[in-house]
Image 1 (cartoon, rainbow, N blue to C red):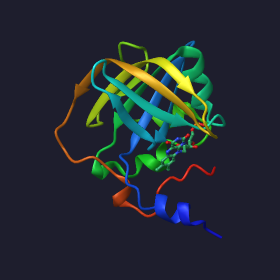
Image 2 (image 1 turned 90 degrees about the vertical axis):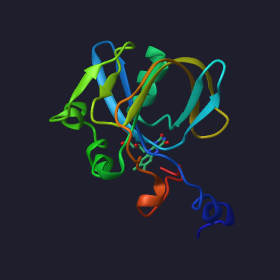
Image 3 (image 1 turned 180 degrees about the vertical axis):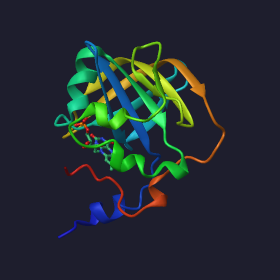
Image 4 (image 1 turned 135 degrees about the vertical axis):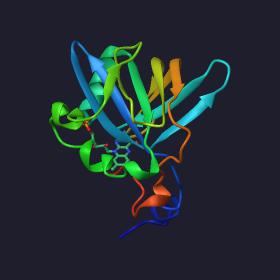
Length: 157
Ligand SMILES: Cc1cc2nc3c(=O)[nH]c(=O)nc-3n(C[C@H](O)[C@H](O)[C@H](O)COP(=O)(O)O)c2cc1C
């Protein structure tokens, strides 16, 4: 049975991002929605990642990640960026390595590349705080958010 706080948090809204990583020649991408700017000067963002995610170890070890903003019409990326095969996730997509070596999805709306400056484990996800070291607006269009589909990520899994 759903608890009150789960029902309330189900009404929070978030943007949808592909978190990409690169470590020792390996790349990966996963959907992340627990993302926020947390400082302007310096420019910092945070992403909360469950330790079970393959990406978690890669961010932890490499100390870097990129967040790619998913466009409203790219809802099918939710299905693409899951599963165990990184090659399949990127197959057929236009991407390049950014300044950090993390994959940049060239058809996303915008991206930020970050160096991890802190990490916290206050609960069952790790908060990686990243300083933005490169960023670009690629297309001025409407981003995908949790308002565009059923079921906000609640972090249970
Ligand atoms: C809409 C949506 C939002 C998600 N947000 C997060 C998130 O913020 N943090 C997280 O750890 N997992 C999140 N996930 C789950 C991961 O994307 C999923 O477990 C992914 O397969 C992990 O990939 P990996 O194991 O290759 O790193 C989300 C999934 C969806 C569909």
